[in-house]
Image (cartoon, rainbow, N blue to C red):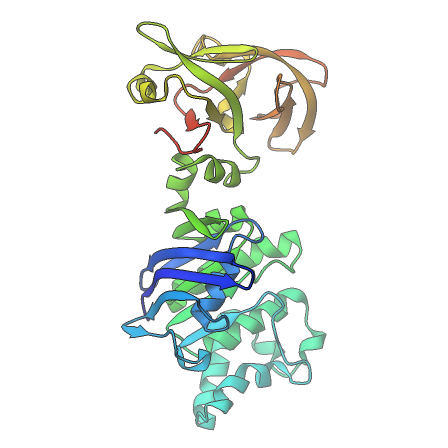
Length: 367
């Protein structure tokens, strides 16, 4: 088991392309840390530098108490699970699991013990004699995980291991990986572009964009208190809605004013919001905090506006309602018993205790 520390980590490609820009990150022993972000944000490059598969341009990588900048991948005490499984098709499952141990000249009895133990953990004991080409995607993923487990590494590195699976199997396998982590209690660094995977699996999430860390925190903190507009818009499905406007001083109250609306800010936001007076701003509100129905109209009477329904997407347990504004449409997540149809004119109420304000220029949160 080991901590992983990244100090001022930089990756520069030819042509002055900065893929990773001075990342500083401490990953605790036995922590399940998820690197998440859009394609090209630098998350996989960061993981590959930790693995030793990508040469670093600057900075330091520590695994435990060892500086591993110049250490070969095979000597870093890590095990990596790849997106494409990277199994040997001419070998059966047992041979795939045992291959790395044989290269390291482990005794035959120890190899057999580790392989069977990993097979039991992953429920693939009945597959040991089958060739990998005979396996389903989920079974191949289990074998890839097993090949990492038999190593007993200090750190697991996982590069989008579920992206090739169908939606139902992805849900099943992310549960299996979380349970596996609880059982083997090893440090895990997990890369994904899927924010649902990040939210459900990680002890801590690192949101990346353009080679930088946007925010590193627990899933709930990132969801409830995003540090900037990018994080707010990336984490959450459907994503957070944004309305453009400015703050006006109404004496005892502040008003957020934009095209087609004028909202009085709740009292808990007033003191913190005055620093944003006179600036272009974004008001952020999550889809579940946009309410349709008369029961909310009395609760937040000055956080309402009339709008028109453009589209309704029924999803069984909920429905997503696309609402027209004078700028970009916004989405409300509402219960299935709310009866609305495209073309309806309705009143929408903003949940007054869960609003976010972001600077129009820096896109940083004010609170």
